[in-house]
Image 1 (tube, rainbow, N blue to C red):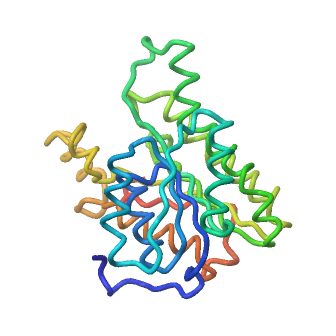
Image 2 (cartoon, rainbow, N blue to C red):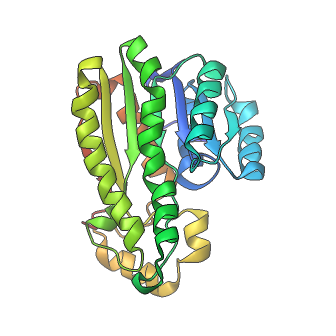
Length: 257
């Protein structure tokens, strides 16, 4: 159960929210936070077991349980089909959170043309086509909030993930141009740039004592930054409390950059 010490946003109650990569990590926390605000949430992932487990865990404590759609976001045709189904399931789309990504480590020398294209197909291309897919519904409603998940990796800059960093930098450019393209339709577009977030995956794969020491040496705040910290920022950018905010990039990294 989430703490009742944090904000409740009346404007999110009943809103229709789509989240990519919502089965685990930051995405799962985002799904949970919206559901506990009374939003109608649909999320996309390829991790079926984890996604169904999240839905069952949340079902008893929320008014409307999130709806899961298995979706390979690297297939644009599948993405568009699932978005249509999700919009029908939750009755529209007021908020899109482009969260799905894969920060798999790789060396410059090992990157092939195929690997490059696949990384872009996971980390950048779906963000564009998800926005394209929700536009008719958002324009019809005369409103919308789109939140694109970038990363501080391109600001540090991180090493050992050059194609991923390329995609995450491009997302900021995508956010800025989309904000101006879509602003006249009442649609806001912002980016969130997390730092080292202590997800279960990160703790399992990369949170060695050495890396943890590097994080704490770099951050101004000497504590783990958690998925729920990111989710609460996303809630604010989705709610009407931020109705005058668009074209912005928000860093949440404990003061690393």
